[in-house]
Amino acid sequence: MSFDKEVDTCGLNCPLPILKAKKALTDMTSGQVLQVRATDTGAVRDFEAFARQTGNELVSSTTEGDQFIFQLRRR
Image (cartoon, rainbow, N blue to C red):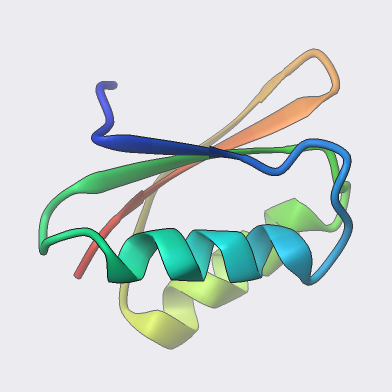
């Protein structure tokens, strides 16, 4: 899937991946897709909760090697 913006949070631990995603989403318009790359194993749970709490849609959650890749659609 294509995306409008990407944030690489590899090497960062909770809560930094969520905080960087939140900051990136504020600069985006409704319907745009943010892709986040993370290596923190807790990120899967964190991004699911973040999407539920903020109303942004977690479009996909995949793994490539040791990286977790999330795509969020801005509400």
